[in-house]
Length: 472
Image (tube, rainbow, N blue to C red; front, side):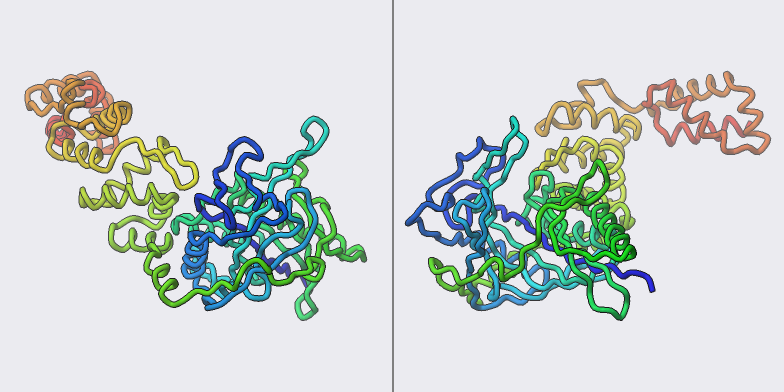
């Protein structure tokens, strides 16, 4: 019988609060090392934690959006282990009494994979190795609020694991609780991988840690599955351990033996009371839930006429989706707006986390489309106009740019007649081909006229004039 992989994912997602989970230190990324710290997140004696209410609200919204059951009462616990980036010698997390249970992640193809739970905890600091031959620690991240999203071990391929993570990241980003930045570590995944033969007990699981891209997650899991097959088929046994991913070699490597829950010696956090979530608090969080990215894509297809592929592209970032929807609503043609955003605008959009710099505003795009529809400029000139409006900024009016550039569509029948006549006269071979039945050559004539008029000729008049002339 063939080997059956079993994969369970644990995702740590930083919540986008201004301050840490149990103190008032800032959570901003990229500040000088060890500047966003205080007695509480440094673990100094006598410092007491105070729970961040905004972090609780975001955590509850996350759980509700993923269909979890909110527990009216939950507790924080101490997870004890020694590591240089953990100044207290323990991490405040949740163990046997999490604030939510159950839930699921729905993939783009409609399949769902269950969650075990979502719980809150504080992040550790960050160790930086091999700097001048040694290691240093930055505790700015210590105490940043996290939700840990624990999936049931029911994924059976590396591809499905990567799809699960993409769907989860989209959900959190559109929810506005996480920026989805894998490179900066605000969205991190640990994968538990084991293999067994069907009908036999589950195998020993190995944890893959610190993988910072969806592509590498998929490759690391696939590589680990192959490694475990090779070990077992050669008569060896799998050791429960934590392994890293070497992207250059394309293999996993051993980091350390894997601890169990008993090793962490969990016990209730004595400095924090139980977390009580009443119905009013939960109801308010539920009322703040936005439309999910998958529901938005379906609505863009059913209501605005987009293809599924276009809807997927236009919901790649919340700000892009919001721009498209506003522009489509103003103009009344989602397909036309969507085509322009995809073909012209997306390459100019700069994103970082939840922030996005868009080159123009929806109102500017509306005004440019109206200039085309009114015959003031041609469709080809629209691209030139967009480039100039983008350069001048969000405050400039499209009509003023048209006037400044002397950009206007030629609709004078005599001028178009002369341009078409010259193109026909200069290309007798193509005229002969067209009249012999090769109608596809018609586009050549249109292109030559538009080139001669620098794209300013009225396309409708050009087509009508050429059809008449070529018909003889």
